[in-house]
Image (tube, rainbow, N blue to C red):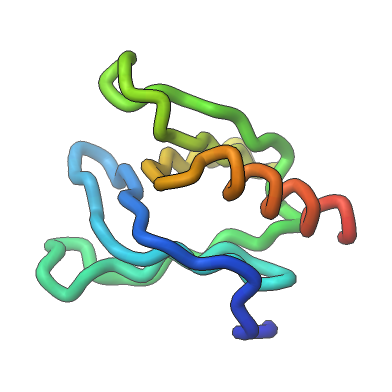
Length: 99
């Protein structure tokens, strides 16, 4: 797994009822959400790009246009809140097409 980052930024990941703050990293093969140390849930989440079937926009609290929804082959949904949503989606989709 390559850890050479193509893109990175701050992001929140919804895990159940908790919103886990941290950093989001995009490599050529995976997306990594690395939580801040002060979160209750402190494990990294790693999503393989080849497992992602859909990347769509979502609104946080039904109003704020800053979310991304990643859906995987196994039906998992990853809800993220990011800055520069359009850039994230473009970069994720570009790398997905290369797989």
